[in-house]
Amino acid sequence: MKFCPECGFRLPVGATKFCTNCGKSLWTRESETPNLFQAKVTNPEKSFQSLEEDKVKGEFQNQTIHSLGIKLEETAEQILKCIGYNTERRKKLVGNSGAVHEIDILAKRQSKILAVECKNYGEDRIVGIKEIRDFQSKIQDLPQINEGMFVTNTKFSSETEAYANHNQITLCDGEQLKNDFYLMNIGRLGSSQQDEIVLDLALPMAMNYREATKLELVNPMAARILNATLVLNPYYAFKYKLDMKKGFFREEKVHEEGVYIVDALTGEILTRKENIEYKSKSYPFFTKSGTHPKDSEEVLADVEKNHIIKDLKTIKPKAKYKMPQTEEYAVIKRESQVPLDAACRMVKEEIMEEKDAKYDEIKIDDIVSSIYISKWVINIEAKDNTYTREALAASNTILIDEIALCPKEFFARIMAVDKQTYAICERCGGAYCSKHINKVNNSYYCKDHR
Image (cartoon, rainbow, N blue to C red; front, top):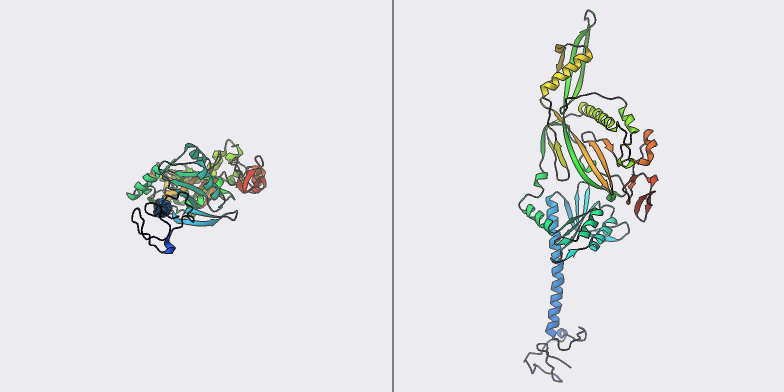
């Protein structure tokens, strides 16, 4: 039995050229003739034209969903590029499990390797925990990824936000996306964080942000950089020459040259402390150990002063030095509080007292500016623990690194045998060496939580 493809009217038996009800021409090539049974039509009154319209509509709808996803990825990629990332879209990576994962956007900037998931939903759709959980399982299988971001044009549920925050996944909802897109288009996205600071005189940086925040762990995703600050402190380095006569009849000539370092903030003349580095080895400067000797801050300050003296004596400062600044870290520049002339007079008086010299026997090379030394202050978060790392950027000198040494190896530290941490316990956030942490199903746990 046949039906008219235009009006659905039942056609008479046998060949016919036109529909007797609506006059629709029934001539068509055999290959183009729809087959109601192949199409699995359950309603014989439905026309052939309706079937074709549904087919086209379905293809159009699928194409539209795909194109909407592409548009969101393109927008997110533009924003990431604007704030300094190098990006790749639809990047396929092989995980530890051997599975191949496709990342919507793979973004790289210095040490940060960011995986971005983009979902372009209808305006009433709320992103739930399931989507974040699926994304989290994907990036956990990819050891090269150290941060994750989920971008949507809609909103996240409160439970989703709490879950993502707990698992250190950054969320970007529709409101933030629109704001970033607006700032990008008017040239204001990140602009206040990408200027250079020009210093009259400074020790050049040998340690950049990437090196300062690097985590030498097998599971770096278990920790995150809470905040980072580059502190710029001013110092004076006075080169002096002493020509004096000693003895009862002042017949002995004495010539001496040297350098005095003055803290331009406090006016303190820095003097080297002997054996302080060895003493610091026995001090557990570790938040995770839960103990801090009363004089630990004093010991740490003396260690820092020793290295500052060494750096200013051995590293040549650069004039009009351009200090980089990005949105990844804050920069604090401290201005000199002690006038240059006053600091110079203090140094001369110190030399007079130490050497029993006269004022006019001391000559100090003219200097025109304080010298800035840059110090990284990094806070690292792992579960409920916060670790501090401080380092002098000019000489790559680590002053304190609470996450670097295993707290279970206290006596090894006294013997100056450092036990580097290997992994972070994914339950408590403690950082331990390989002897005190175990791998269970691709996760790491300390002996208290295995």
